[in-house]
Length: 198
Image 1 (cartoon, rainbow, N blue to C red):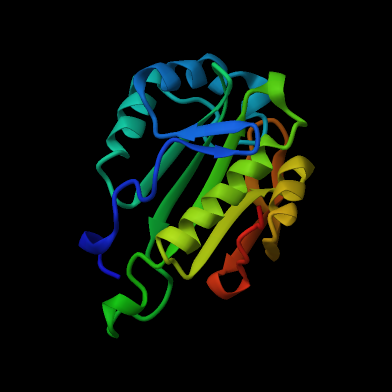
Image 2: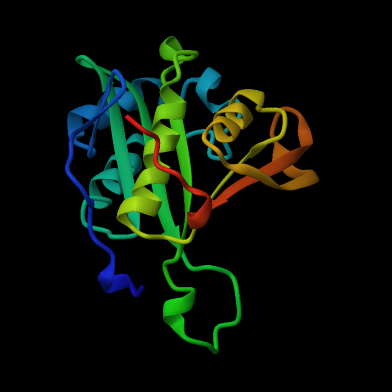
């Protein structure tokens, strides 16, 4: 699949996922995310601990026209409670072969939840939606997600979503407060994906 073949914002949006309404980014939704995005309780386990508000707004609004970038904002009623992202990358391998075999065939995913709404399964719903987007709508072959090994909540979300622990790195991830920590990579292949039943 070559870059020009990737759909921009595939599927119908907004869409309901459990109690949440997931929609594409808009200025008001991004502003709502930015009210908690740089909170230390959110950034504790993130690689990018602080974001510039204007840069994030520009990046997320640009994702509406970039086929390799997909961002969703989750609302519970009128309240913005979470966000999720999917970015498409080339698979690793020899580049002298057929580019369609590895170009734009894989993705990474992430999710963030407003600290006031943690523990309600919203991150799991977003992870499942991102996996469905990757496999059912974008027809990718593999999705991966990384986290610090000590981030047990994120590990549970990825495992609950059906992703397997694919790599455990010993002291491979730098944390500004804790030094070198272990890191995890979870992944799923298209053939391992089964769409959740309604």
